[in-house]
Image 1 (cartoon, helix red, strand yellow):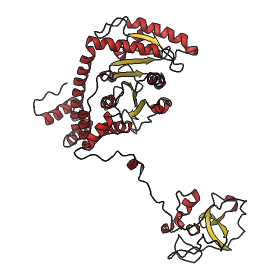
Image 2: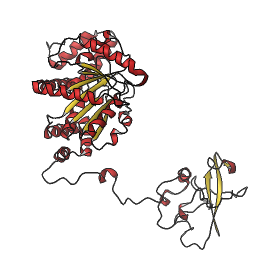
Image 3: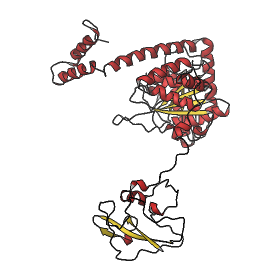
Length: 464
């Protein structure tokens, strides 16, 4: 028999612990038969081993035990095995808590390292080698047009990136994959807690059951303090996220106003190019002035909760003016009578609004649905298809998409000009003027005029 002694932290064996300096440990004996040829108990070359008196904090002499070690039950493994006791060629894939605690006492050269027989996940999941004459953007565009879900995810990540080289590649990718005209883009908004994610899951499962391919772009609010975002909308859509005919991509709003993210429109372009014929864009929980999603979709749905307001609430300007169909959700159980009254109130309010040129007879309208019981979803889909078809036949849909393109061109120009304010030398000048405004030497309007004149030259108009 041969005895091997090691130290085990007291946290695992408080009942057998003893103080040793400031670190509580307990010494445990391991009795191993010397005749076993598969075990090597001799210390490695250069490793003096425990109990040899070698100086240093990692290898201190071990005093004799003051009490015998606790007996091990039948079949119980010892809590720690030194590397010298491992069979030849064995590797340790993961260290336990005890091993991690004692790692500082064992020479690092003695730890086994797992052999990496396979490449990392991102390498194994990479695409096939790019043929000669093709760039990385060309390969990604080809895979995107073929409906590759992984290529779509990578493409959306590319367009959402803020790096200059990524932005140039994203523009090339968007130019290489034209957006088809037969994709129906639906914007969906509502107050927080109205059931947007639940409605999208039930609605999306109904559409995939009819043979449609559904893409969902869920925008989650970002923290004003830390900038982080939970991105929990995909977690709520448990069943739809497992549907092979559906694609869900959550994105942070990154403090963008309007209920959508900065690159949501371009992500919708990529989803349409990947072959998804129905696109649902879920905004953050918004109020009455968050209407940016209407500039990137063909139809706009507004979800309301029962007892959400009276007729006066329905005629307020803002988000009510751009809604094509109002859906009163949670029309089930005890809330069904309230949902019917709310639907009647908003139906009366919609008749008081000014008629829009793009609305056929009977639109906009209010309806009751239940995302939990999936009642009213088929009727809502039929109304959506009817409205979309009438707008296409009248030519309004083509004109609307052209106007949306102009709107986003102007938005890109505005964002580019704002980005110049965050770069030198304008950034330094703006900081200097801000300090003068803080000290009361300049008014905000006068300081803004000075900044505009420095950027665009004397005589440039500073008023919007």
